Image (cartoon, rainbow, N blue to C red; front, top):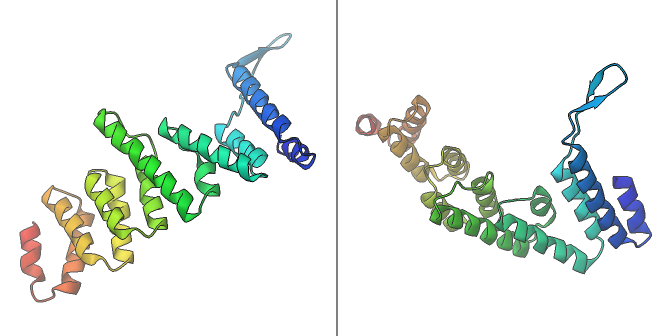
Length: 212
């Protein structure tokens, strides 16, 4: 499929490449429901690998040659993101600050919408928002985003790692202290103690007692 799409693109047949991708994906999905094929005297188990991500990559390939087509694909992916389908090909191939800002706003909007309707946040959206804020070097926005979603365990771990890497130990201390007060893990207590010993060697014992 990749070779066929590349060949059509070289011939200037981008529309034919898009049609080929759509038709192939539809047919692949149709046959993916088949579990067994009957032979003359036996049944053969058949497993089909239908990767939506693979077809997304082909679509980007077919539409990345021209400026307008590339822009249209960006908009298509943005609309899909609003529906809970966050495409890797969209995030990996559109990386300018302007594009990143649009991606971030769409992801944040979807998170806010899910919360307002009391629905689960689509998988990967919190992580993606965090990474987009990092890529834009938006420290203020990063902290505001974390405060609004600080109950997510994975997000807390990411935030602590970022804090320690960027000398934001006061903020990391705040997170660890919350964890300890809420009956958190031994790791949280140990990491908090390390920070306290570095920053307040003379009073670290009393602060550790307070945390307990």
